[in-house]
Length: 241
Length: 241
DNA sequence: GATGATTATTTGGTAGGACCAAATCCTCAA
DNA sequence: TTGAGGATTTGGTCCTACCAAATAATCATC
Image 1 (tube, rainbow over the protein chains, first blue to last red):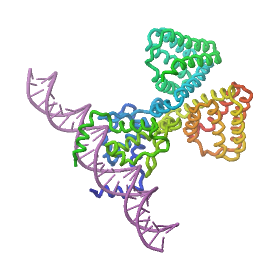
Image 2: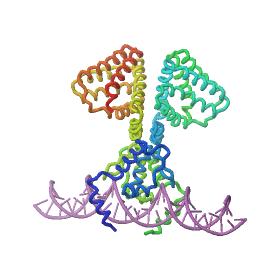
Image 3: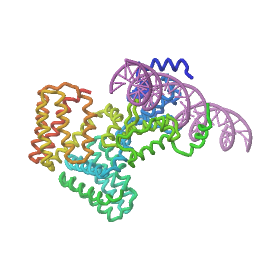
Image 4: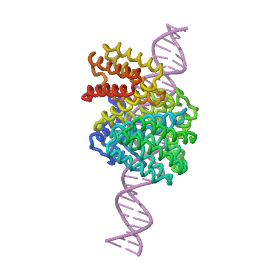
C-alpha cells in the first residue's frame, strides 16, 4: 500500500541529495565542532527519525556509515557512543583488510620488513636527536625488560614497551599509532609461543646493544644493532604461521 | 502482518550472532579461499536473500561492510564486484577517518612530517642500495620532470612519479601503497593551486640535488637534499588549508 | 522505608514489502 | 539484419511491524 506522503517524497526526492548523506554530514559537523565529544551518546534512532524527518532505515544507514568511519561505536541495545577519531582508530579500521593481506604470499614478511625499515630509521633518529628524558625512558624500559627475563608474559610486554620508546621520541602522534598497529598485526600471530629464558637473554642483549649505540650517539651502530636484533627475532618466528 | 516463517526464524535466531556478520564472514571465506576471485560478480541482492535466508536489509548491510573493507566494489544498478584486497585498498579504507584527522590540530603537518621522515630513509636507502635499473628509472623520471616545467599539470604528475621511484626501490609492495596514500591525502588539499615556472624550476633543482647525491652514493647528502626539498615544499603550501 | 521480584518501556536488530531510476534484455516491425 | 520501443532486472531508498535484550518503573513483602 502506498500513502501520499511516501509518493510525494519519492517523486520529489530525485532533485535533492541523499537524505542519509545529509544526516551523516550534520552529525559529522557536531563531532568535529565539539558539540558532541568523546563518550557522548547519540539520541535513540527513533528520536533522530523525528529530528531529521527521515525514516529509521536512513538513520541506521547514517549511523552505520559513521561507525565505519570510526566516529561512532555501536553496541546492541545501547545508544551509539561518539568516538573522536584518533590515529589508532584509523589503523584499526583497516584491520580486517590487513588480516587478508597477511595471508597472501609473504604478506607477513613484507610487513615485518617495513617495520625493520621504519624502526631502523627511528633508532638512527634517536641516536642523533634523543634528549635526556628520552635516554632516561630508554634506560628504564631496558631495565624493566631485564627484570622480566624469567616471566614470559612480562618479557613480551617490556619488549614491546622498549621498542615503543623509539616511536615516541620524534613526538609525532602517528608513530606510536603505527607501532601499536605493528604489534597487533604481527605479534598477534606468534604471541603465546613460549620462549626460553636464554632466548629472552639474547633479545635483551639486542636491546642493550641498540641502547649502547644510542648513548654513544652512533647512528650507524644503532641501525646495525636494530636490524640484527629484528632479523634474529624474525628467524625465530618465521615458521610459526 | 506476520507470517510463520518470520516468526520461526526470529525465535530460532537468538542463539547466533548478528545475521549480517555471519554473511560477511561467509563471503569473506569465499574470497579468501578463492571460490570468488578478483572480478567475479556477486549474485543479485534478491538472490542472496534466499540463499542465506535473510532479509534484504541484512544483505545490504553485509555488502556495505564488505565494501568498506575493500573486498567488494559497488556501482548502482550493477552487481557487486569482488576485489581481492591489496595494500591500496587497505589505505583507501581509512580515507574517511584520515580526512577528520587532518582537520585536527596540526594534522596535516604531522602527516607531512611522517612523509619527510620515511622518504628521508628511502633516499638514504637508495643512495646505499640503488641498482643500475633504479638509477635509470630515477634519471628518466628527473628528465620527464624537467621537460614538464612549463605545464603545471604535467609537472605535478612527474613530480609525484619522481618521488614514487624511491618508494619502489626497496621492492616491498607496501611502500608504493604508502606513497599513493600520502599523495591522495596530502596532495588533494593543495592541488589545482597554480605554480609558477620559477617555482617548478626550484622544485626540479631539489629533485636533481637528491639524484646527484644518490649517484654519488652519498646517503647523508641525499637525506639532507630531500629534507630541504620537502621542507621548501611545505613552506609553499602550509597556508593553503 | 528498604528490598527484591515483576511488569512496562526503551532500544537496537531484523524481516518484508513497496517504489524509483537506470541499465539491460527482449520483441517485433521495417 | 537492424534498431526502436517496451518489458525485465537490479541496486538504492523508504516505510511499517515485530523481536529480544536491556533498562526503567512499579509493587508486594518484610
